[in-house]
Image (cartoon, rainbow, N blue to C red):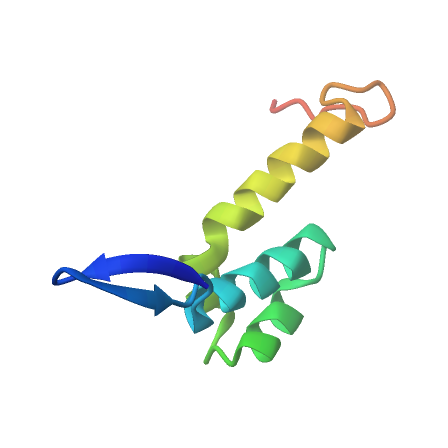
Length: 83
């Protein structure tokens, strides 16, 4: 809890909100490379599109991190050439 001043009165306010805990849970699932369908079901979203709309930025960050860890441009995986 943290102390805040509202209308000149000191009050205690929860540091974590239900939304922030939900975001933490989603980010942990994404960090563990949990598939999108499982994330959607665990968060109670109607479809995967809703999950992507809300948490897509976290998924993109995780993909970028994975590319860096794998060494993008690595010779292990040949690149496809468009002809």
